[in-house]
Length: 585
Image 1 (cartoon, rainbow, N blue to C red):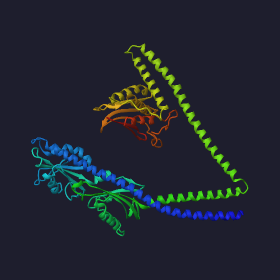
Image 2 (tube, rainbow, N blue to C red):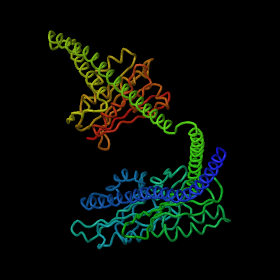
Image 3 (cartoon, rainbow, N blue to C red):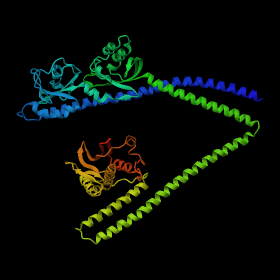
Image 4 (cartoon, rainbow, N blue to C red):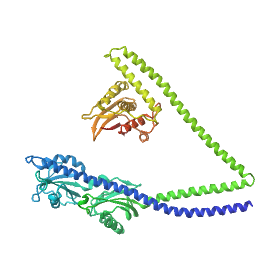
């Protein structure tokens, strides 16, 4: 009977394995479809983001041109050359990839051009007829001309792929009479590179951008830049069939469509072989509604094998787990049945059930004891430290009252009182770390808060051989902040900096204002932060100090986030670390 039972069990196991294999094969195919769609969907989101950034770039320049035309329109007639009037704006716009600016009074004379070095002599090599005709048309007052990508053969911009933008300047007395045109020369490849270069999908996928003629404005491979996207591929591998990517460009990407597809390529990031790539694409429209044919195609591409290889590895692991699980179940079933012939099955099941309940109860008891111990320790620690702090604060306050107001020791005792209160507050934060109290934010001078903290810490750090320097920024508006909480952050950062330099060094503290944020920096010239610690700097209980709690930077980060601000750092081995706090004004 036992032999028959074992034989039946083996047959049953083989049938189950065959069923699982068939189901696994079907599941693999279904997973490949689902994951491929999801991967392409993620690529499409990246392509949409790049295209939106490019559109926003052009919208900003359009707004800037309209503003410039209004500025020039409102200037006196004897204000001098238009170039002198609008050239100061070039210093701002050159950061937006503007290579040159110009001004034309009409269709007849050539525009006056200038760049960062001054006026450009001679012909700039640009055909401005279409731009001038557009901008000088009274019916288009207030509109901005955005041309298609061109590559001049002569002039200072020869060989570069450019976009010409123009806006008309109307008369003061009659908005329908155009007195001139302001022009911009934009580096199209620099714009595409700004938003597409370095974007990665999956492990090795990258982005590329083409203009309305199919020329690469950005690509992972530098030698492709400025080349035609089909011709340069054919030149590299003339034996490969490029009809799929040619159709994709002509019928979908350069017609302004958005979606996902695939094409065949002959290489990818240094790997030379014929492969199928997944592609997601989205259009950018530099001209907006004025020229729907002016399309920049943004595409994210990654090898299909990258996705399917990952799926294959996952499926293999899944099958191995299933097979192992079934083998364990099968042999367990055989053993259980063999023992069931000799012992009571009900007794075995009851024993297993009781055992499972006992294990769960034991685990629950251990967790409860741990939490209770932690809570008692935290309460005991808070009680034992807060009592001496209260005594210190009280004694300092009593002694200070016996001193004259102008006594230097009175000021020191006041600092002792304040620091005792601050330490008491820090104990409360340690105890209530998971239940933070909102800061009391008030509008105040952040420079005063920082300077007072630096002055308070200078003498203490000087005894460690650490020199403290402070540089106050100018023009910083009042900043909403909790002075006590911010002082706690600065003290923590300065102490950390000093402790990182046991042999002495320099701690530099400065304030500044930029882009609507008040900036506070604390830097040192110590050894820097080790890489294995840097990735976990702001995690609770992450510390390299034997006596540290690991809550200092975590508390600092929470305080700054409660102020709607940001805290970050830059570290260099052997050169030091700089922490920067950004608080909105």
